[in-house]
Length: 224
Image (cartoon, rainbow, N blue to C red; front, top):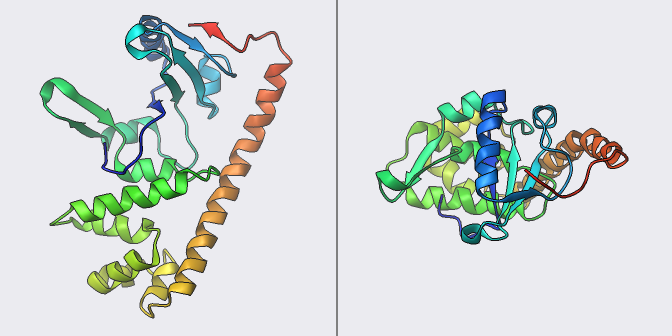
């Protein structure tokens, strides 16, 4: 939806994990003939601790579509804030979808998974190419999140004042003025490594919890 060339293999839902909302979600999942395909169980406590809950649809119109449901994500703001910043995308009023803002999506993609980092780069580049008259907020987003030396150098040369203001926030901007692509690439790799490690540390206790759940009497697949 944001213009990056990638086919979605599943649908990720960020939800408000309130009792009323989960009841509504259960109804929707039953209509989709969904089955839970992995641990943990579909319970509020696991969503609020940061787990994702995984389903597969067996409805004829969505056969085998996977749904990943989450409520709390590492270094991502609360649902209320995500909802406040959401984008509404679609072809017309009858087909509008509420999706997380691009900055929030990029933040959520900073994981240990190899496939997520090229996606971050493509998302940012697609946004940069698409904007003809960017806002100050968009410029700051590009400066803080761009993932290639070429784009960072171009941004720093184009938006000199903003890059100087943000150079203390993001070290890689300090190298861009020299056009030292090797130093920029090294700093980008360092950023990625630190995010991957932070994500690993975040998931370590959650993975341990999943191992404990496996020793309980929960089935690995169940009707909603």
